[in-house]
Amino acid sequence: MRIILKRELDPIYETLALLSIEDLNKWREEVILELSDCGLGGEVFYQKHFPVIEKYIRTFLKYKVKTPQEEFFYKDKSLEMFFWIAALAVENREYVEHPETADPDRLRRKIAYYLVDVEKNQNIKSEDDLPDISEEKALLEFMDTLSIESREMWYVLNWLRKPVWWLQQLSEMLKLNLPAFEKARQSVKKPLEKLLLKNDDTEAYNYSKIAESSGKDHVVYMSLGTPMAQIIMETRGYQGVLLGYLNTGKGLGSDAKEIIIRQAKSLSDKSKLDILCDLKRSKKFNLELAESLGLSPSTVSHHMNFLLICDFVSVEKRDGKVYYCLQTESIREFLKNVEEMLL
Image 1: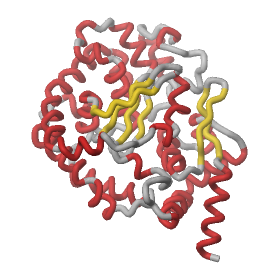
Image 2: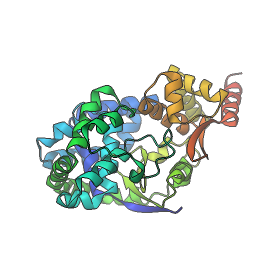
Image 3: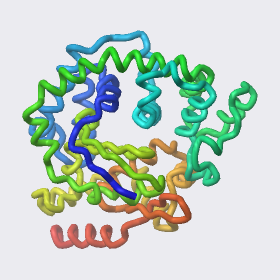
């Protein structure tokens, strides 16, 4: 499996990410809060590193074309649903560009495949392994097997009932707003060039260990729309241009105190501590942790991002599944550093 890093933005992914931001002020507040949760200094970090991102978003919002489809795709949707639609779009560009050529049954199976938890259903390797869901009864039975929030069931059901029609709506929304993305990209051209050339190594973020479960080559794009995230899909990946600042600090100039504060903050959250305690007993994959702790899979993924950043957990592939493992040596090192600092 090869990982091909492209130091450029993906217009389709970026436009989808930018369309998810409706209110810049609200977005700024949420980002600063998340930065504080990560132990990165909140507003101070934002003022230092986010002006380029904010200009990019502000320019997009200035030229954005408001469409009636936007509410269907974004209003009251979880992050999990956003990445589901993003995966559908970037992994099937020919359908997005020419939705009229899509076969309804084939497209329905593709859409359904992106919803299946392949960790739980190891026999499903591709959309061809899914049952026939073209009839309403079979479709409803399939819906009962999905691990998605109840409030979003109607949204998924609408997609699966009329896949080509909704793809056409998605395609139209994207085409109308790709020019706004181009304006946004042009507005930050010079600082973007520097960010794209930063020597961030995908290996520093466990990318290959997670991606190898697909068994396919991965093309990884840089992202301004999700600047501090790492997104891994079937054959595509997205690495935020500021992701390096979320590393434990190795090679980034962070001193030991900053790293310890970040790690300590991750332990102040009960759910994150519960995850670590559960992993102490045994290695688990996402769905097992969700069921064990009574959390949604998307919530577990959210918490796991912070624990991976703090080097308290790692990932391991076994029996075709990606397991989360407790990083005992890193935890011992954290405790040792705290002891040396305070005692």
